[in-house]
Image 1 (cartoon, rainbow, N blue to C red):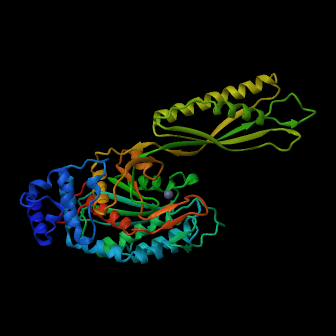
Image 2: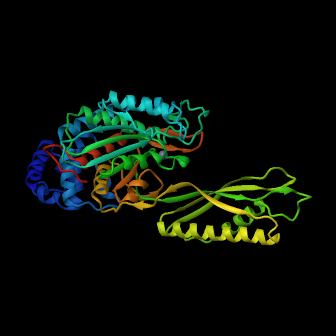
Length: 473
Ligand SMILES: [Zn+2]
């Protein structure tokens, strides 16, 4: 393997003459050895990418991920392949068309459990871009498989079709002062578009991959969807070796941790009665109030970050009725599965105490019962920063000159593979944005072509190129 690397670096260094720019005097002669040292490896990569106008700023930034020589050597082979370099240029040139596609996709409403129209459009785009067998699965995901040489890993790269906005929301896109305004334009209009550009880039590059790639426009990422799209993918394809989600904009973050959540509708039921003539009877709303007070007083650790909130309350019949029913919706989250389980146990305990107290307060004149109905379940998980998937991603960030600021933990589609022990990360699709989940969401396409470029390098780095590089999954 290193023999190939050696020959290759000599060739590139000679043909571009970038050594003197990027490396200190005298180091060109020992480029081969130098490339196997982490700090200088960056300079080598920069030398390879300079012809594309890309360079490495990574060397100056703190290093959240350390990359092994082996992974770096394989990635360098991919990054320097002439077909890859040509395709990277094409991705940059095609960015205006990518943005036009982002507008078209955003203007198709896709509320939770209402993604079908957007899925149909998306699958048609997948077919046109080189995946003729793309289809919509039983859950509603748009799915397209690109087969590799047959003995490689199965890699999944996805973006989510759904938005948080109800069907009646105005989703028309407005361009003002260089910014695109529309609900969902970034989350996940950008990820979906980057995915389509990626599909076209790979299928038109003439490159045969070693691993298989499953491209997915998935349903159900946002709140009520409860990750149902990606849960279905991992049920249908139990042998997935790695997963990347492109979610929203930006190119300085990589999510390697999955915040878990448990959400419940907590339902209180009792006999109910007239507020005056039946006075002295237990009340579902009074019991709920006692429970919320107790929950509000619970203590949770700051690290691992653990949170709770009662988000909505409903119930009762009228102002002059003792309530027969009441309900609150509760959201609990933690970066740690054990803390989340501990919080849930405490909530159940204090809620039971509250109900007992209400029943005792009125000498058991009627009985309040409580039911916890699960309405959301996102498992916690994480991907080790040492995993080759994370290493290849760090190299891809570096290659498009977008310094990786930190590894993050949040709640994304990657929670599902992480919880199953499958390596997974979530990245952005390039450009910048704000106001996510609000009607004034905006997207600004500064250097936005780097999003699909990064996804392209990352994907090829992970699945390997026939006759050139080894898969890293
Ligand atoms: Zn999203």
